[in-house]
Amino acid sequence: ALFFYLGVAVVASNLTAAVQRQAAAARQRARTTEDLYLFSKKLAGTGTLDDVLWATAFQIASMLKVRVVILLPENGSIAVKAGYPPDDTLVDADIAAAKWAWEHNRPAGRAADTLPGAKRLYLPMRTGREAVGVIGLDNDKQGPLLTPEQQRLFDALTDQAALAIERIQLVSDVDKAKLAAETDRLRTALLTSISHDLKTPLAAIMGSAGTLKDFGADIPEEARAELLTSVVDESERLNRFISNLLDMTRIGSGAMEPNYAFHFAGDIVGTALSRTAKIVSAHKLNVRIPADMPMLKVDPVLFEQVLFNLIDNAAKYAPEDTVIDIRGWQDGGSILISVIDEGPGIPPDDLERIFDSFYRVRKGDHVRAGTGLGLSICRGFIEAMGGTIRASNRSDRPGAIFTVRMPVPTEMPIMGEQE
Ligand code: ADP
Image (cartoon, rainbow, N blue to C red; front, top):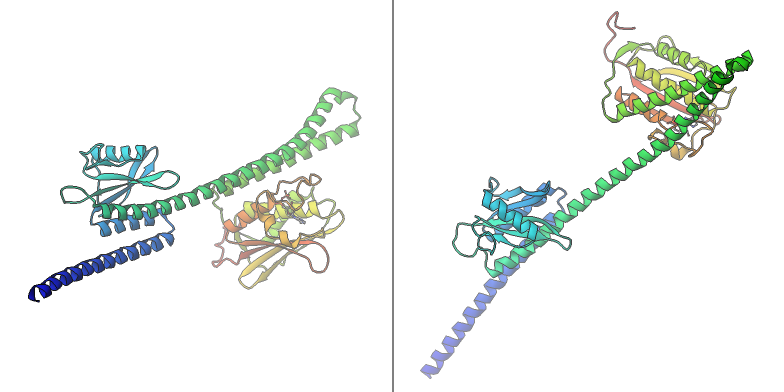
């Protein structure tokens, strides 16, 4: 009986020990799985490449008890992008091993078949598409760096990291593609409008000038004057178009520095009107700007260009013999100037979009020459001077209203500063 019980006790204690070992291993696995889950959750919520790399380096270092560097491709080679501990630098042998691992998509460096002289072991991070980078590992122990168990854990961690890196790179690729498509769209729009807006006046100028040159002497005085007027008018149109394009590039490159000075709104409207006199000659003008309105602190050249574009549009889109109203008034801390016409107005859906570059309500409408640049220049100039501009429609009858709102200057003009 004694031997029997002894036998049972030995078997039972062995079984208990095995169960305890299994329980410990299961607990360890559960912890690892939870860590992996938390890591994947962290990666999913990370939007920048730096954060993904840092989180990966930290996770691998803390779970596998190793030192980590992560290298990503850069300008045809591969460079360190993150590390844990962070201050790691690579010697030449390591850089060669990392490069080899990257180029051949296989392990290299310490304890590997290739370049074993390197301090670290370099392993490629792979996705279904390709290797996205290389991870270098080392520790202070001798012998193999990772046990088979750790190798599996490492694979799981790098797979997730590689996917997250690929996701971020794809997003940035899509952004770049979008930008390229947008630039392309602008270029096409520019080319289309240039071919129309440059060619039409040029053809007219060439035609008129050619006729004058060849048949000048035989043409009656009146027809000659008409041809000359057409040359001048078309040249002016060309000039307007080219200055619009130049203004646009100034706004686009951010190279616009308004030259502020104090001015009466009435004065700037007056200069704009004298420039537009020919354009609005077939319309009736009604200017109402109170003399006691506070002065504006603006760049007179830019502000005048805005008014010019608005009045030009009103004359272009409203039929002849209709009234163009120019009103100024003060509303609390703002000075407002409106250009109101009796044209067809603007479709409600387009009230914002007409301020986009190259946007025209009636596409391909070549009856009224235009580029879709005028209003975007207006918005660019006014916003550069700290104001706003918006479009609306009249409520009493069809017609568009463009309203510029500028802040009343906080300081008063110093005598003599006003021009
Ligand atoms: P462009 O006049 O050269 O086409 P703009 O940027 O000045 O370019 O104007 C953009 C579009 O807004 C115009 O094509 C036109 O459809 C619309 N628009 C501008 N001003 C008026 C207006 N006063 N009345 C009706 N539509 C207008």
